[in-house]
Every structure is written in structure tokens, then in C-alpha cells.
Length: 136
Image 1 (spheres, helix red, strand yellow):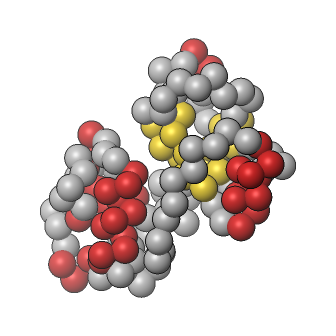
Image 2 (cartoon, rainbow, N blue to C red):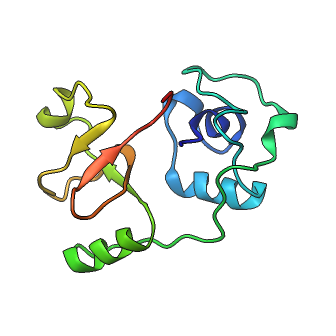
């Protein structure tokens, strides 16, 4: 249910397959009126050309976003209960480097305060996991 390819191809303020900034992605989604569905804009794993016909979003939409700086677990759990949460993780950690995938779920065991350099979505506070679904 991710709309990654649309962001890679069309969000000019980020860096395509070389990464980007999640706040710039949110701003793009709001300004564009959403992202297209992955059925209409499937993941290809490479930066493609901007497609104006596919740009208008009819899949994922957000109206606003907030930045949570608190590490208080109950507040984070409540926020995740209300909606999915985008998180940053340290992809250079030894645990993440050895991750081979299990249907796109990565269990987050601890938070050592290291700034994130990879983005994912937390879907459930009772089972903290990082979910990525590029081509499912």
C-alpha cells in the first residue's frame, strides 16, 4: 500500500532513489493533493520520468502532519493507535545490516537515540515493526 514510485519520480525537492527528506515528501503529498495508487503507479526501483498524467493523487492523501520529539512510549503508542507513524531508523546498525526481510517487517527492539538515516512506517504499537511494501 505504499506509493514510493510516485515520490521517487515526481517529488523534485527530494533525491529520487538516492534518498530524501520525509518532511519534503509530506509537503509534496499535501500540495499535490495526494499520491497515486500503486496499481496506477507501480514500484520500479529506479527513478523514472515525471508523469503528469499519473501525478494527480487518488490513492494516499494527508492534510497535515506533526513532528513528535517525545520518547515517552505511551504517547507514541497512542499516536500509532490513531494512525500509522513514519519513523527514522539507523540503517547502519549491525542489526539492520543483517536484516534479510520477513515480508517487509523489521522488529525494532530498542531506541539508542541514534538519528535515523532510513525511513519506514510503524503500524502497530503492540508489535513495534518497520514495514516497507514496495512491490507487494
